[in-house]
Length: 140
Image (cartoon, rainbow, N blue to C red; front, top):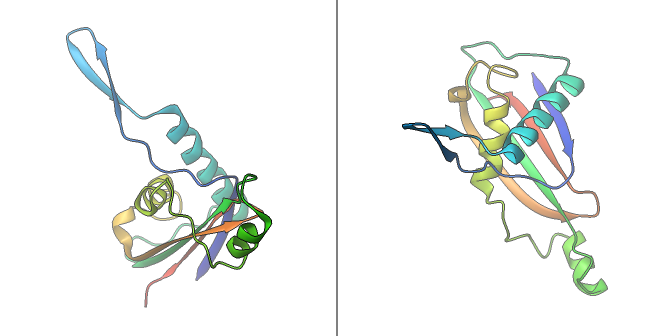
């Protein structure tokens, strides 16, 4: 079984937990931007993959391709090199934060736990159509 879905818009990374004082205690919380993006990933997965959930004992292979928008400030020549994948994005969010936000948001939705992921890849490219494409399949 192989599932593939897209999340439109600029790629986002998992934000660091924040802390606030709650009386005598310090309370951790997830930044709003992270929560919103995780909800968007869940929504798109459910919409495009019909709530399919891999069995608990299935090892998984996850491939994530993040397409960043081409900045308007770059020259036409440089923009063309970006489209041809000769120039790749070396900017935030980092590859590990992209993988983390996607895999964490699919916990108990696409699979029981992200510990099932035994093989993973995150790739970054430029595109005129910014998005994140996620492919999940049984690992070989």
